[in-house]
Image 1: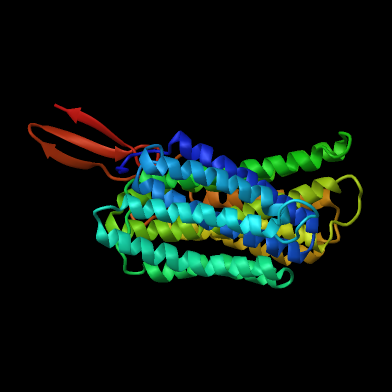
Image 2 (image 1 turned 30 degrees about the vertical axis):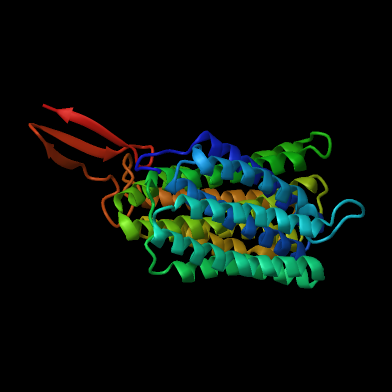
Length: 421
């Protein structure tokens, strides 16, 4: 069983690599179709991937991922998720020859989900209440989505698009309804916060990969170099907005909570609000790659390209603001104002060149983060508004003749113990 202070294992990192590949495939699916339907298809697949990933993040927080049955489940799921990634290009349109792609996608996805449910059930041996919770939450969310995905694969387009979208929406809705009032738990706040931070980092890595694909289509040139600098600046701003400004404080806030309150905060702030964060990164990556492909042509970027890029960045900023509000407390108003400006400017941006759009998006993000830093800084020390003090107060416990001071470290939830005589 996992305990407070446990960290992410190497097997979990290996497991996440399959999702990196799947994220790249989702981006390629959106770029290949290059229309609103392709965006919807990609978001539906991304939603399914996310709910499967979160299921294993909760499982690994209950029991160590590199031991016993959970280790076997993680390995099986890694293979299944990689198969899902392979089938993403054929998830909606089967290619000639070979297996029926849509059903391969569905079957591989259900293998990953069923493996999780089975191991979660077995890991709860001796705890009948936990087993009832597993049956209620896992099966109630998985069965409807499995039926919809199977029906969509057999019916084909256009029904498949709506069946897939409904399946991606039903899973979190049913899981939310069935877990209300249940006694969930987060054994290690450090593990849970770090786990989600790492998947955000991997998604940002996918965006850098997409940038590289778009930049290497033609010979190197000044417009490509300028576009690469601006695109990397956007990725750095995304990293800064999450890791430099939120991740540590949110991890400390989660570590301070206990019991049901901690589990509810983890569910809302990490399981649910991190999906639009990941979706924003993927959409922005699609927009960046599209911009890089056309960077030297001088033509207008178009409504779809500018809308995808600005929509991804706007969704990311709003989602991180909501995440901060739910877990830490307070509002980051610059993260809410900048998306309004970006989305309102989409019709104008659609008439500009891809390089100009990248410049405006990067400039807006930098301005928003700079404004946030100025509003929440007194020069040297950040003073974030939190439900409690930002720096967790030391909790002194009397043990024998000595005191022990405990304070969370930078590593989101670790505890340093220092004996004083």
